Image (cartoon, rainbow, N blue to C red; front, side, top):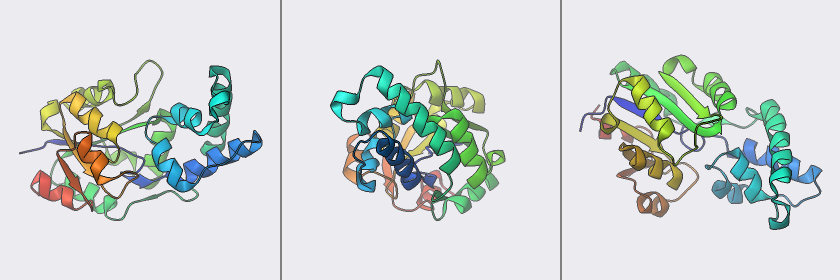
Length: 218
């Protein structure tokens, strides 16, 4: 199969962002006098957007809309200052981007992280110039697994959804890809398991970024 485009998730796919996100949220929880969570727990909090992350880390009795909104504002403020303390690209990602671009594959990033932060992280670690589009969560656009954002990228690239490969590391990503009619590939170096990725619709799973070149045929 010939793929003309590739969409990458950000957290757990392009970059290991887990510890910076966890540290920011744990600082917010500490300020509220609430218990923190382990890094392993955050593997399952990350992926559905920051507001969902906030809600899931709070005790059940604290999950009112007002309280979640207050803690959301706090984590975004903290994370803006601390999003590159520990975050890094995964090994092999920079070379993968370079080789795909060199073969004319159009690239994009799609994340449930707020759009401003998505763009800042991609710019700092990989350069936004390497992507045709970098898209994060925005007001008025449903978050993944709704396919609206993925289809917006498809239209921007001028490539039919069926000719786009979608690489992500969570069930949300696999569902997004399938909902958009794209080829779903699971990244095993990310935050979730092989069984979860296959069970949520991955057409293939890979353990190193370079394996994506084989799927694309490079």
